[in-house]
Image (tube, rainbow, N blue to C red):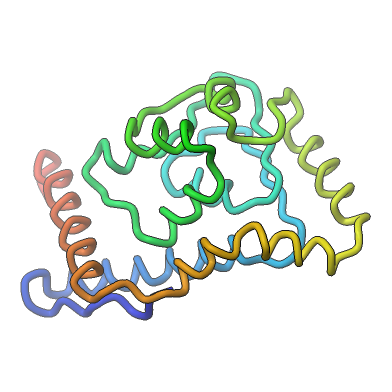
Length: 190
């Protein structure tokens, strides 16, 4: 996962250390969900924005609840860069067109539009029940075969996640994240 983020005691001080810790925690949580060796299903039946969608994309099976809620990866719209772990999860989980629309477009979409892009296994009025059905079917299969297929499918993404990014890249990401936070907080007075 690239090890701890730089402490950034200079320019950003305590804020930099807290942000670095937050990024470490996010990377670890997303990587653990993405590497979970057993069948994993997500039922999205409400808003799934930014990290919420990344977490859903860690799943092997994704059911999207039909409705008027919004789904999207809005990071770039507010100036927040993607950490490498989240980026690799999105890249592995989304077809090329969906990746471009979700990441570079940075808009919110209806579940139907996201499903039309190729994200998700079902668009349903009962996403939890459909997710349980898909999960039960996968759990009825031999576990070793499932683990092998999952590892084969995600191997390249797992390798990229495990490779430590160059320190300059990590610092640039932290600088961009903190600058975005500062810019977003300015109109709110802090």
